[in-house]
Length: 92
Image (cartoon, rainbow, N blue to C red; front, side, top):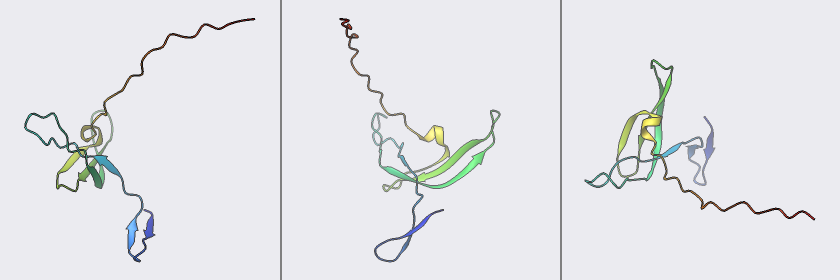
């Protein structure tokens, strides 16, 4: 764990990890909190496919979750770039 001292002389953890908070904030389940949720603890879970990393996270609004990282991360919407046809090469 890396420790740094801030401008007030307090020691802080420099290896803090954040995930987007996966909490739903509306009744329809279409909007997510998305605030940075700090990873407060991490641990290893046993599974039939081998060890799985688990975490406990909490966001500034007070939402907290504990479970496998893959279950707590929300996939970001994938943007596709418009396909452009390849340019014809001109040989001289």
